[in-house]
Image (cartoon, rainbow, N blue to C red; front, side, top):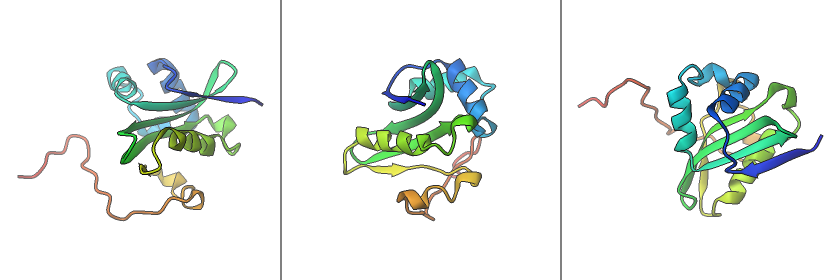
Length: 138
């Protein structure tokens, strides 16, 4: 198997949704809301994709300033291609696009919580999330 990694190759919302479904990340993403998915893709400024020929098998989608922080908001690998190092390589490729001064942040899916520590990430207990639809209390 020869996996090819591409930086900022444009992918369609349909390709992205198909991969999300094949990766289980679709359970936690708005795959039924094409406007939202298009916005997610159009407003990301760093997307690394993994391809097996013409088949999209992985994606790392980030929002970053490239110098201080990079939020890796989606890391998805087709279930048939998991445990082959593709997810790790997507992160390596992402890190290769940002400056050494740039921290990489992500929120782990519950099932992947133990995946990141052995890769060198440190767990941070200070993350706060304002859920969709909630307003700042004034």
